[in-house]
Image (cartoon, rainbow, N blue to C red; front, side, top):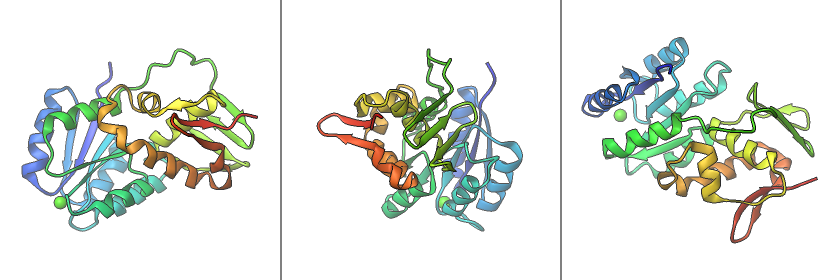
Amino acid sequence: MSQKSILIIEDERSIAEPLAYSLEKDGYLVSIATDGQDGLRRAQSTLPDLILLDIMLPVMDGLEVCRQLRADSRTRHILILMLTAKSEEVDEVVGFSLGADDYVTKPFKIKPLTSRIKAMLRRPTDKNTSQDTVICREVEVDRMNHRVLVQGEEVGLTPTEFKLLWTLIRQAGRPFRRNELMDTARGEDANALERTIDVHIRSLRQKMGEAGDLVETVRGVGYRFKPE
Ligand code: CA
């Protein structure tokens, strides 16, 4: 099994160091950057599997780091978990629209955070791996190349949005409950993510433009992709 790497971008050593220690103990390769610009540079050169990104950072803030990571094709698919202070609720939402995959609010406990990280890094085991491209209506999803085309135009999605769309479109017409979507999107750590699924769907729809209506809400159930 190849060792997964995690980059922590956080200027408070009292937060970064115990977290790094705990993640290293779990077998991850961990590095720490203490300002946004250094963090961005390291992310671009080392391409970690996941980034823990604080919002309030010296030199360049976490939102700008997130924006730049998502704008660059080399770093676009890296999982990003935002660290926010309690008073930064607005930033949490902004973080999602910028493409962060999840967030935790400070102060946080290390154990639940590391299990969430584990769940994010766990690839969902998928038995139907034979099919790698699905086309339904004006939407084409190419899983191998992590590419989504809406009316022929490429749409940049976060890893979580991509997994959600892939799950829905592959069985277009079938309604999925939120907890099913959470399972497919993230591995099995459903509890921590229940509140965030609607936010990801909202962001996915927004990015798909007019085709966003194809991701339908099924009342009392969850979501489905509108069938042909
Ligand atoms: Ca900070």
